[in-house]
Length: 565
Image (tube, helix red, strand yellow):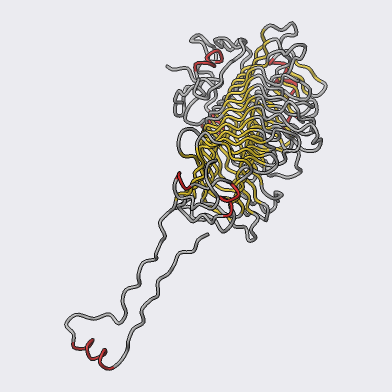
């Protein structure tokens, strides 16, 4: 960082003459002049052009530098701009370090000038690497890696490994297109809880990378002393697609779209993840949009579809994963994924997965690979998990008949409840499958259960017992009872068109999912539980389609659609 210059401060002259003047003067005379303001050098704009020269001053388009190496050697002060010629391609990478930037109020901007966006092409290095500094905005660039197995770097990488749990403030990535790297955008902390604060990634396309479109991460999570590398992270209007995974990595998950790890307070909003994960062969798989080791995450108004896995694990739409707490998954659309559309899971033997909510989401035709998943899947040691007002439709995928809801073996916890959801098996598998979970692990109340186009009819499997009606399921498991009174509905939910495959590609396209809305004659209208009165659970402000929800006592509908009155 360029230091601000401090002018010399004049010294006072003391003596009897001065004292006398002070005593007899009508107006007091200060003994010293006021301290002058800091001298701040004006911000500069540097230019790069393929026709430039690295011996020039870089300060105008006609005296531009030529290479990213020359730009990396410069010291960029707060407020400076580094602009690359639009439409041109620059080989290699740009490196900013602790000597650069650093002021969140006066960020250094890296972008383009002229017509179109400049391109950074990297064969074996990170496109833009920002190390141990912040106050940096990267925008209006195209970054392309080699797209080969040798490409081990990220398109844009921010990394803080300073000691002392330091949060560096303000990094922004806007209107970039990143492809052909190991990661599209990578934001990491490498020492204690050091990382970044006030992070935004917006209006960008992160595609055809190997491991992830976007990933934030930190050091290992300690459930006894939770700490997070990053704070106040916003991801909005990001498209993450065809990040296919690394088949050579048989240990860790690869091939996800958007992943928030080690974040305290974060939002993923109005974004789309699709076509990711097909080459991942690891025992843990990819998911379109998910979070882990984080607290206070809001994932809302996103679309995650057609994500895959090359192995047996995951490949789903949305996931609140290990060590996630105080987070909300709402108003999202998931369809056509290999794995669960909606997943809450932890394999950790701790109580850190707690206080989460999954509400007003739509899932259609998920869990295409079947296996150990349902369209909605819960697993592990979960507590205070509220899953309510979702509409989940399971469809067959070839010979695969996935269940609507699956509780994985080992599922246990307290305060895990599924309420006011629509569960429809349209030619698919059972409504509920819980092969090795105790009936006390989860409470089902006020849900709608229905089958259509199935020769097997109504089925719910818990352990070795198969129930063929809602009544027998209540009797055998104690589910769908509230204070001893029966709840739940076993009726046709009256959805407009639940089986025509969805083709929604934009988060704002509510009409594209109208098939999962309630018909005017739906028996679910007004039949939902008042979650505030009965369970002390706030239903939220609106349904998936944007309709406002009534205040207690309602009436409330079942599922993700609150039909207008």
